[in-house]
Image 1 (cartoon, rainbow, N blue to C red):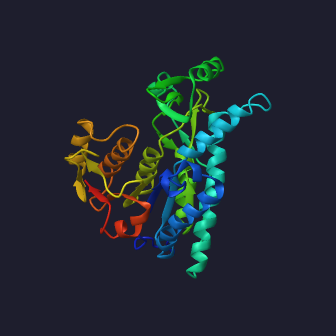
Image 2 (cartoon, rainbow, N blue to C red; image 1 turned 90 degrees about the horizontal axis):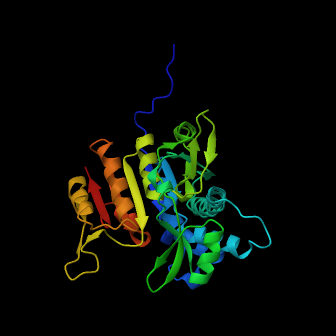
Image 3 (tube, rainbow, N blue to C red; image 1 turned 180 degrees about the vertical axis):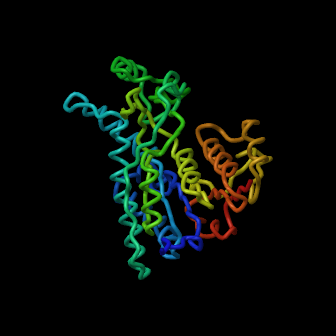
Length: 324
């Protein structure tokens, strides 16, 4: 009797979570589709080098600027066309942005002489229907509104909060990811050597009904928390969180600011408890890092860096590296 293929020598998977700055230009006035392609091509070069090395790679990405624009388009056209639910918008963007990232990475691979390709998988992420975030939405999306316009949108069911000196903004639930519905399919495709873009925008939020069926929810899931969950489920050794800062810092933008090259889960958890990492920026990345490292082996590491230093960060020469 012959055994199946021996995968013991296959390198552990790498999960790369691309933040908004890896796809969208930092200047809002420049944020259109041609410039998003331009920015993504820069990111794609490093991703292609990683894929060309033969490493099993999973790519995920945020959609913060894009979901805001999509919601705004729907609001402006609300008198002419039907409204698209937030979960469907997440799925639409996962497909469209996945197409863009895949095209840029595949073109870079061709230029390197590699025959590998990456493909996009729109991914369902199961959340708890009783997650408290559904009762108290806190995730801001979209544009700022005047008080008058905010009243109109609240009459249509939106929850709005006032941001001092800026106006009103929509907030939506951001429940914790519990399960990746397609995880077995992802594992099989990775075992076959496929490069994948999964869980775009944190994945499409769905809940399980009492009869076991799935139902979408008006919510967005933090992409870093989803990336950490995926990394744990596929046995990744590296979770790379690409953001808009070169390194994680404590006392950020204060005279006592200190950038971190290497640190541990115990240290960052203490700083998280002290409020060093705000919920709307670095906080979810640190939470994802802690959860991933505490569920992984001793060789696991989390890297946090910006687009410009991705290659150096993978080699330990830039960014912030966190270990258990």
